[in-house]
Length: 392
Ligand SMILES: Cc1cc2nc3c(=O)[nH]c(=O)nc-3n(C[C@H](O)[C@H](O)[C@H](O)COP(=O)(O)OP(=O)(O)OC[C@H]3O[C@@H](n4cnc5c(N)ncnc54)[C@H](O)[C@@H]3O)c2cc1C
Image (cartoon, rainbow, N blue to C red; front, side):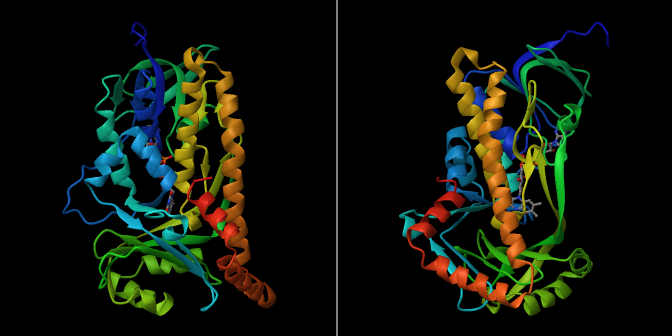
């Protein structure tokens, strides 16, 4: 392939997941030419499809970003479930409750299937003739100079870009090609996602009960559906994963709060929980966004919301730089803004995880009093909620 022509673009984005696709829409809207490289696009949406297992609690700030990207209108035509109340407790009677009405908001956020968020963004990408997608395709090598980065794709394309944005997820190959290391920590808990059909009409509350072996959570889904999240030891999760849906339902009845009501299990999947943080958010012109830069304990459903904050920050920096959008210094500025914020959220989740993952008597009492106190903390409680919703 020695005589092939090198293709040029302003921005190359590796990975068209939620983060990569949102970045493509925002940067194309700024007038930049964008190439997107994706190994596998998701199956198209059909209303009769059963609900996916992978869902996210999309915060108000993320909704604003999806609106700005022009994808929210498409999502509204698929499946979304607003939630207005959030409750967390360990012992009965010691709960912290949050309500959208306390903040004067119509909802705290939405529970949405990851694939649908991605599909809505991919649909919006079609509006931009300046976005070109290579799929199925992957990056095989990269090199860079002071002015540009050059990617070799496995479809034979050689592509030069001012910026290469690695949005290829937790195991980012682009991050490895750029030589960026990660710190990695595997939690002692794994996590099981269980989709259920419930007897209740569509619910607007998400709740989480802490137990010594891990939290048990409920997320409402559109219609009479819900998603259960069961955190427990790897061996326990493995045993649950091997059960039939009926057997699993019996275990859920035994171990989840009775407020769940009657239900049937319709799907399940299990995941290890891993915290990762890239040592650097860029190497020259290669910049990491979303899970490629950080993964977090999903305890508070913040994963993709942090990714969308990366996207908003990067888009803002490029726009603010005007004609200097390709200056290398922007990557350093991005890292300075985003790394401490992501680290703070990771550490916050680890603190929760540490405090709630044991049966030490005095600590158990203290954390329940803290939950109860948090419920009455007025402005402090409101501030914590605003931060979690991405409004601070
Ligand atoms: C159990 C669990 C529960 C979670 N719950 C929540 C939640 O409630 N709320 C929340 O906000 N987050 C949650 N998350 C996290 C959330 O799923 C991730 O933060 C989110 O998917 C990250 O999006 P992304 O676009 O950065 O990466 P991904 O979703 O991983 O997308 C990466 C994209 O890159 C593509 N790709 C991969 N490799 C290559 C390559 N070499 N070349 C080209 N393309 C490539 C992939 O096909 C994919 O399309 C949860 C995670 C887990 C594990």
